[in-house]
Amino acid sequence: MLDGDERFPVHSRQTGRRSDWSGVVTSEYYSTRMTTFGEAGYRVQEGVLDAGEVEELRDVVEEVATRVAARAVRAGAGPQRELADGHRIQFSSKTAIQWEWADGSKQIRLLEPVDHLHPRIDALLADPRLTGPAAEALGVGEVAPFTSKLNLKRAREGSPFPWHQDYPYWYVAVGRDAADVVTAIVFLDDATAENGAVRVLPGSQRLGPARRDPNDPTRFLADPAALESSSEVVVEVPAGSVLWFGSYLVHRSSPNTSGGHRRALLPSWQPAGRPRLHDMPYRPELVEELP
Ligand SMILES: O=C(O)CCC(=O)C(=O)O
Image (cartoon, rainbow, N blue to C red; front, side):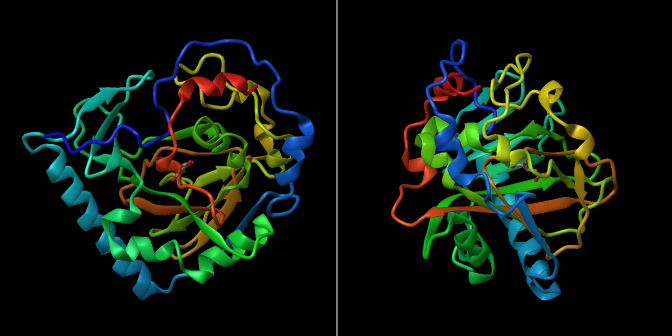
């Protein structure tokens, strides 16, 4: 029996036919969330988690990665696919596993969702130190989980995340509600330019959906030629720090060329009462409704 579940939406899934943007979403709509986290569009706080919590979460994510990788190679494991950009994805352990880009690599690059795989990760989705800023940014009294990711940027092998907004990836499942999602990146290792720190474009959220890259086979990435990338801020922070941002903020991260891992957990929230991402149908062709 297969244990994969192809309903899980993930970054970089293969998309359908390309068509021109029809302008179905109005600028009035986009304006509602452009001020999430103020002018800059993000918030950084050091020392949210103490050293003991970071140590515990590092052990947890390593245990989860070992368990998921072992299940993925057993007889009857979920199916593996090649994405439009040639990268590998596999559905197993009720998560979408993105394998590292290098041919034949057995390293996990990303898992989504991940909260069902360990109670300590699940607890982050209800941790008031993380949910408080998310609720405040969304202007709601109560938030609910949207999705969760584990990004494992392994030493020397961790591949880059090119310029993108989260909005298109959420839009193809939840439509315009994608504007109301806030993500926290919880850093489990010091983040440096060398090990693949996250890089943000302050203020980019105010422009709404960014033009997508016509040369990107996945159809979801932002067009670097249309970005003011000279204003990029490299978020170099110690382990235990958190970066919060909304789904319109343009961001990326570089490869890990260092000798140490750069691991992070990424819980996401939305206003309470809405369905979780993986309970919604995933319709990648809808990305063509966006610029
Ligand atoms: O973890 C990172 O380096 C960036 C991840 C990212 O941009 C994402 O998952 O959307």
